[in-house]
Image 1 (cartoon, rainbow, N blue to C red):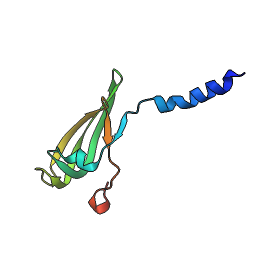
Image 2 (cartoon, rainbow, N blue to C red):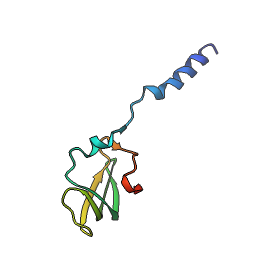
Image 3 (cartoon, helix red, strand yellow):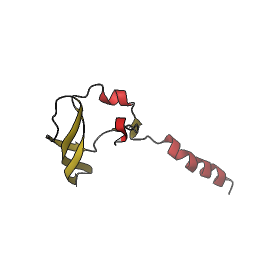
Image 4 (cartoon, helix red, strand yellow):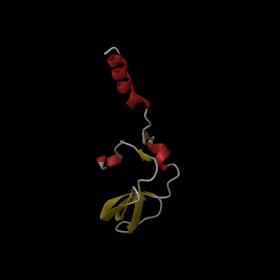
Amino acid sequence: MKRFPLIFILLLSLPALSLAMWAWVPLKDLVVDSDLIVVGTLSSVYEYSKDGTDYGQGVITVEETIWGAANPRETLPLKWDNDGVVAFNTQRPLGGRA
């Protein structure tokens, strides 16, 4: 019974010792090396899993180009997988669109 408090404290501290996969990245760091930044609609999404990795693909229909060469109504293919670190930014873009 004397070990219960020690074990309890140890169990509570384990999550603090684990590594996280998410990383907060400032918006300027996310876009500094970008070739293309657009506002658009993602459609025709297809997702599947293979060997423990999730894959997906879809088509972006461009509504507005913020940086780079893309025309309105142009469609761009998009493919992704979850293999690696995921970066995100919660800052809302100008105009309030997500």
